[in-house]
Length: 258
Image 1 (cartoon, one colour):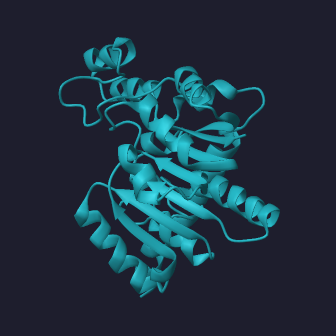
Image 2: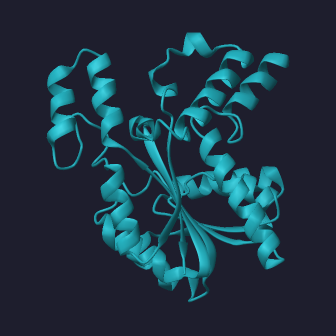
C-alpha cells in the first residue's frame, strides 16, 4: 500500500516531474483570478484529453470545459471526473479549435489551457486566434508548447548528431521522419505568435529543463525528485541565466486578453 501511495503521488499533477512546474503556475493564476472575480473560474481546456488538468481544477471548485477530438479520451475523462466526484463541474465536448465558438455557445471563458496541443494542430496561428475569440476581457491563456533546443540537446546526448542538426536547422524543429511531433517552437517566435493573436505575455518560463535528461534511476527517491523539482524551478527563473529556459522541453506562457 505504501508503494502504491508513493507511485500515485509521483504521478499526480502536483508532484509529477512532467507537470509540477506548470501546475504550480496555473494554480497560482487561478487562485489570484478567483480572488479578483469573487467566483470560481470558467476554464476551457483545449486538447485536455483524459482530464489530467481539468479534474484537479474542478476539485478546487472551478467549472471546466474540455474540448478534445478523441472520443476515447473524453470517455476516460468522464470516468475520471465521476470517480473524483466532480462530474457536475466538468463538461466534455468533442471538437477542436475550429469549432470553439459553436461549442461554447458564445459564452466567454476566464482561462484557456492549451497544453501540448499547439504542436499538433494544422495552423497554430489560427488556433491562437480562435482561442482569443472566446477569452473574456481580462481573461488568460496558459500555453505550453514544445521547444526546439531541447530536442537538439536530447539528440546530441543520444549520439544522434545528424538528427540533432536536423532539429536545429529545420523549419519545424523536427529531427526526422521518425519524430513523433509535427513541430516544435522557438521561444521568440512562439511569444510573437501569442502577441499577434491579441494577448499580452505576463510570464514565460521553460519547463523540464533537466528532468527529461536525467535517468529515472537517479530520481527514484522522493528526496531526489523534490530536489530536482526545486533545481528546475530556480534555474528556470534565475535572473542571470534566463537562457536556460530555452533548453526546457517546453515553454510555458501565461498571457492576458486585455
